[in-house]
Image (tube, rainbow, N blue to C red; front, side):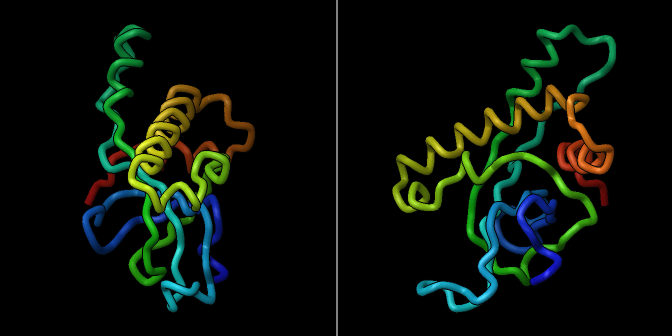
Length: 145
């Protein structure tokens, strides 16, 4: 799949996280030993940050951003919908494939992901390129349909 690359924001179409946004961490175009179809490793937000207004204090904004709940999973390429947005989060360091096999290690991966997502959410203005800033702001918005 030429369109679905790492860093691309996608919408999950099937399963428990249907309708949620995620970022592609790694793609497997030819499949692997366990999964013989093309699939990708995604990391997304199961529950997004709460609404923030301009009048709220910095402490309250940080507290409301802590409600984020990440998820990590392998998913068939046909079950994701690629968007035009790209995010420049270094998720390959946060998500290690070997840690996803063990349940306890997967919890640690999710905690690390939560920290990465919170840092990016609170520091959205620090993004260098305008295109990636748009992708970052889109990723953290609630999907409206």
